[in-house]
Image (cartoon, rainbow, N blue to C red; front, side):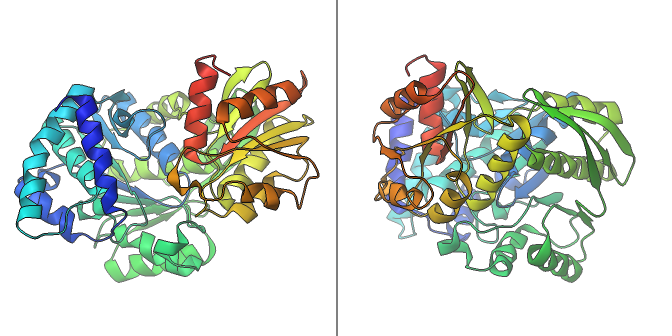
Length: 432
């Protein structure tokens, strides 16, 4: 298969849906020689929000120290190759095609023998283990796909678990209370393996209990590691972190939003734990790594005329963080909001956070079958604003938003990652 054929094949596996459990992935990996048990030093990263940013920061820190660092993340913004990176360089499309061509006979054999067919994400996870084990990375940062306990990444024998936080998301799969969701996320904690978390409240209590039961050292961001803001602007922010191994004064990051300071402190907690396992990471290495970290689609400025921000705030906590960040970094600006969300997300709570106070609101349709009745978002938004526009096409929605935005206004595009991806592509390509 070439890359396009491989992607068509992979998309065809979406018919198997989201089917949590470890039996299929374990069976597939056995057929491949268990590449996940080939000596990879795996940092398993879960949580509701902040996984991607924490992964990006830790990857840069380890890379600055000279390590070869693999990162498996999801979802992608523009191309599937984004999910597999070594020191920030994406896997080559031809390599994806070759690996999927290698995997396909094993998948066909499983089906012929009467086993459940692995899902798209399980196949992608198996591909990750094959790719990174053969590339002989020094560290693999492995991001959880959904939840933790029975997510396909949880077959990994990790040397460190990171749980960024716990909030309400994916309730149909993970549960309807913070404790239920935290219990699923705490499933990535392995006996005796150190854990770092920025979770608070009931979520933290569940993680603390899991660590006690499994004999794990727990580093709590906000208690064992603390941070103090210094300044912020449209180009980034400065702050200091007091870790367990030292003081990191006057750190800088490009990423916007107070929540990124928490993610940075979490990455430092992870780095300090990795030094206990032999990683050579100096204070200056950590400083340079954090300063270099960038993740597209997270409070990203994509245009200056008008000033345009895109952010994948697809749940309540994400929306709350976005609202705070806009107030901190761009005070006094009127906001023209372009928003579109999937039907299975917390639409009402996100709208309640973001729509009040917006100058104009344009509701559009993310390019996903899960968009459902995308127009319903406008009804929810109508509770907080009188003038709501419905524009199904994302490009046309952006054009309308640009026409309505004054020279000092802020155009904010947010909601589904599908919307953010399409909007980012159009804006950067000059098509809107």
